[in-house]
Length: 334
Image 1 (spheres, one colour):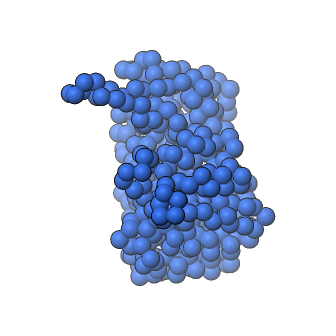
Image 2: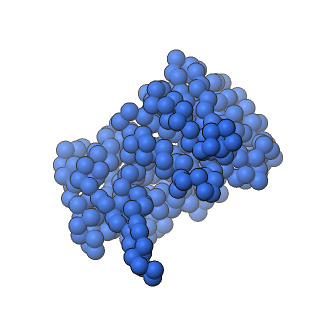
Image 3: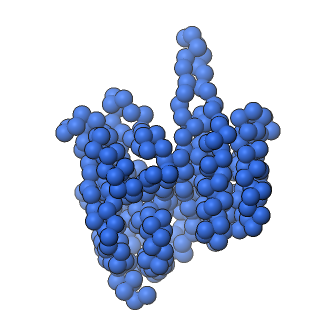
């Protein structure tokens, strides 16, 4: 029995969370949910979108499944998601991108994983005004941060039978910061002779991904490049509605869909639950429940491929719950 923190989220979050809980329950993995409130709903009762109780729950349980959150204006948080990563030192952002037959895309057979450093670089937001007419942002890359994200990428590749890791950088221009990241990646790669290693300059990487994504496998990048490239990869496979995510640290891991909360669809059960379900799949694999995770992904892929019981964005008329029920029914046949 796993005790897992559950944050339904804002907007469509409760709908896609309910659908995902149904699918996870059908997998046979026993889960006790510790439900917590964060985001807009938490403001009224706690005066903050990220109550201390949420952090405490994740620290205690070690694993959380989270729906999309909206960060209200004027609360002091740039982003609830960023605050969670900082508080829990969730240094590794994992973003798989895979094509599923039945999803409209210009590409076929894409199967990429972006491993993004989650705590430093320009994305950390260390910036200030220089007088009235200039602004300065500080790019911080550390040996420790680079080493642990590169090691995570190689360990992930080895554990998941991936063939290659590509380090993404701009070391040709930023010779100190990105130069350090690349040098550390090269050092780490020497400890994994079974995994092919290469590096690509970030602008060239973007071009390569839209020309021949099949050449790439695991991409490891500093925070800002990883943020941009992971959305690019989501675009290759149909968009953010098919993009699961994980934020992983030494002591905790938070799994969540990458897309937003889409408040105009709140409570209507119209939203596609695919990214949330796939985030649950990532969570199960993190828990070493690989057989259950594979069954869910296979069933979901079959439902999408058939196209009969899918949501409106996939050309169907089903609600999110009905799509989840179809996945459960398909699981029973596997």
